[in-house]
Figure 1: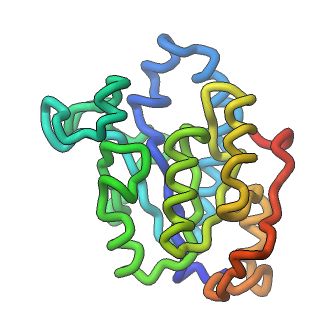
Figure 2: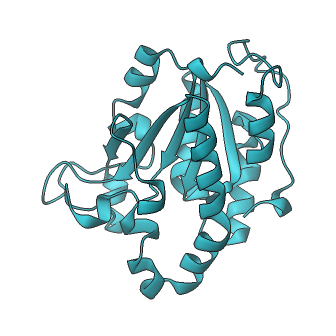
Length: 218
C-alpha cells in the first residue's frame, strides 16, 4: 500500500454527534463510543499521521445560518448545525492538525455536498480509508459513493459505530461488496515495509472482497 496515494477520511466525529453533550443525551451510545470506537479511531489516526497518509475530516455543518443549503433528507430529520458553532468542531481527541482538511457537509455523503472528489484527485489519492459515524448512514453512503467513483475503498469497522450493534452489522453486510473491511491492526501490517499490496494496483470489480467478522468489531 502506497501511503502517498492513500487518504484517511474521518466522517462526522464531532461535538454534535459524539461529543460531551452526548453523554447526557445518549449515555449508552456515548459510553460505547468512548470505550470501543474512539480508541480504534485514535489508533487509525495515529497510524495515518505516522505514515504520512493524507488525513481528511468531515463535519456536519450548514453553510448558511438557517440551514437552507442542506439536503432534503437533512431538512426532514432536522440534522444540521450552524456554521462555526460548537457542535461542528471535531472532538478534541481527534482534533485536526493545522494542515489537515476539514470539510463541512450538509448531506449524508461528502461526495454530494463537498469538493471531496476534486480534492482527492488533485492530491493523487487512489485508496480511501473510511471510518467514523454512523455506519448505516453516512459511512454507508461514503463507501458506496467512493467505490462508484473508482476509488479503492477500505473501511475500518471497529472505528465505525451505529445507533446499535445490530444496525452496525447490517450496514457492514450491505456495503461489504464495495470495498474491504479490515481491522486497524491489519491496516498497520499493510503499511509496514513490504507488508501489503500496492494500492495503485487496479481492483477487479468481479472479484470478492474479504470481509471481517462483524462480531469482532464495535
